[in-house]
Image (tube, rainbow, N blue to C red; front, side, top):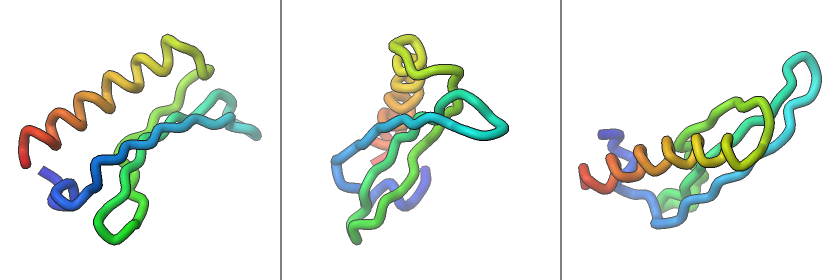
Length: 73
């Protein structure tokens, strides 16, 4: 288990943004905030486009990571 997971607040933020330049597509991210109000990256993914299918795939991975984190507390 990643030790820092013990100190995260129960807030999960997800967002996506367009990539411009040489690489096209979008990046999706999931972050949490630790006990010292520092933003901690949980995971990220590069996807072809931001649509329901991409978000569902990404959120399944986030859910898997979060379940693992909660289980190991």
